[in-house]
Length: 167
Image (tube, rainbow, N blue to C red; front, side, top):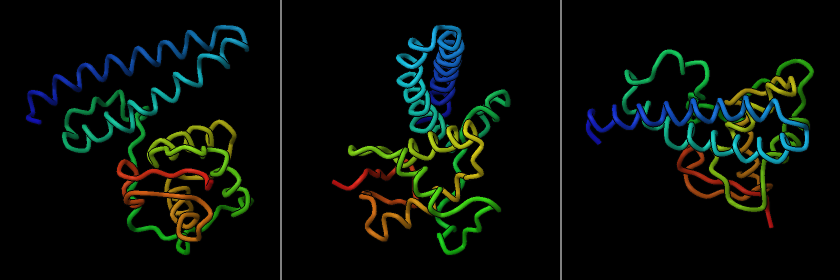
């Protein structure tokens, strides 16, 4: 992709991202039942747009990322340098709580690691959990290494790997 194509794509992605954010705001004003029905699928679509399309584009063309999106867009930290043995959990957090939290994000079907981590960041903040992207990424790799979850691809690259609950 050349720069001109990247600019054109970026413009359209920003419009799509803003439209989805406005739709989530509108959904938040609906009744509880409608919120439950519509916000989950829209949220997953938004995470997919951001992690699978926008982040890779802005990794290749970082100067195209508008400053207004810096706080909104999840920019993945590298996972290659963090092993679970190097992770220090904050006071009050336990490995069991992190495992339970991660398992609640997984499904019996394949999901991109980037999507799982993106959902994890948002839910962790919503629930007031102290779990960071790097903690969750390192722990997912550990769970895979020990056979507690299934994974395929390169777990050091969240956009190039998938995870799921064991059958």
